[in-house]
Picture (cartoon, helix red, strand yellow):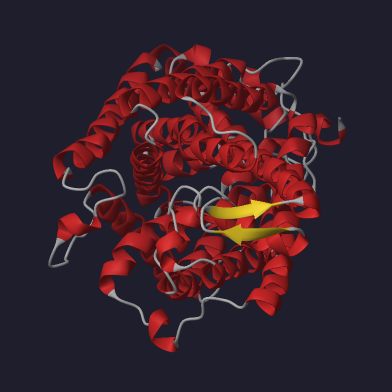
Length: 530
């Protein structure tokens, strides 16, 4: 492994985040996230529950395409993140990588889209899946109570994100543990169910891949497998990012294969194709198999009793907490990315203030809550509580907005290898120059494809409109506008925020001061605090 050179690291710190505001704010950061924490944060970011039903709704082919994505996307994505996260361990992660590779203006657009995507996700598919879970196992929510439930869900997440990271990380990691236990218990229950009730089997032909299903399933699978770079957004709060990021990538990657792939297959063998739902597929499958502990299946649906009802209710609470923790871990990272843009002059200065006491970006945290609340209220109002339409619109927007950012984040690994060849790289993508280019091009191509496929479903098929998401049948224009207008607006907002950061950009930090106390170095006093 390459050894760190303090002189080189200091020079890079000045080049990466050279403003006086950056020097001031980074002194508030505390290194409290260890190796295991980093791995659990990655796992918490990648293992999601809100899209299990959406993926499973495409049948056995979804599992085939999952294996393809793990080999041709997840593996190169992990290699790429391990190199970037360990070689450029500055707070803000993706923002810094894009800035160093393509300039501050490009990074400004990337950071604002990477950030705002997560308040939308929290109020969108996460909240709607939580509502569906609550309605399935406890009581159906009226439209008025959906507003109440959704807002409580959103602000519970925001409150957690505001906490100091040494406390907030436990909510995120506890959520990862809960999801792993939930997936394991669900899989064991499916096996018990299969022994007593049989399964809805499918022949080998059902796994045969087709272009039409690929276009529908691949974007959601790509979205579900994203998250390796998230801890790097808080690099200067990791105890040793140079060592811990590559370690965490490997462990969380293996965990993703086990605790995401197996439950998808379990859902497919339990539910009939007609029962698979994008909104509540996982919840419906869980309710179906829990009859092994008490209950029966009637003409009107599954009725749980005794231990079956108790265990199902406990797991339902676990699902809701798991959904909330998914939003929390992504907001922990994305809020910091936008805050770094604020103190680096790629956004207004107020967005870059960190709390002296908590070490969290309060301004962006609260703004995330406002954005998420606005999205929730607007979406419920426009769809009148139509869960399928609400879910489809927000899922498409969340996927397309974040994958556009990866179109610049992923190729940064190639640009930075050539632009900063002498920077110590504790981990390098294997295969030399060829391995570097293959990894960068492959991941970037997947990101570009996903964006296009989400904005225009059914591309390249004989009947594109038949691929429109649930709730948008025959409404191609309405769906397209629901994707294109917000994306275009966020690009313009990113450029506007960049313009508003001009004064901050003009106030440069002293190079001598930066070298005396170089951010991102293991020797900082903050390393051992907390």
